[in-house]
Amino acid sequence: VIEGLIEAASIRAGRDATLSGGMAAKEKGTLDVGRDLTARYLNNVPTTVGRDLRVDREIVNSKVSVGRGVLSPGCSIAGGSLAAAC
Image (tube, rainbow, N blue to C red):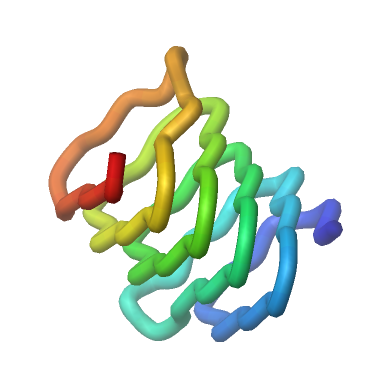
């Protein structure tokens, strides 16, 4: 669990990750999560999630790959790409 804002960092979690403040990678960071990811938002973040993705607000200009499902009914997606297995 990371409480604050994350900028331009590379994060790898073998299991689950919660980004309470969201992440803005500024085209320099990456996010790789082995199981489930919960985040407030993702901005310019290349992201790989092994199982489920939950984003509260928005995904902007991010290339996101999800192994199972996107469980984010209130999330806006602008630019980038999103691929989910089911």
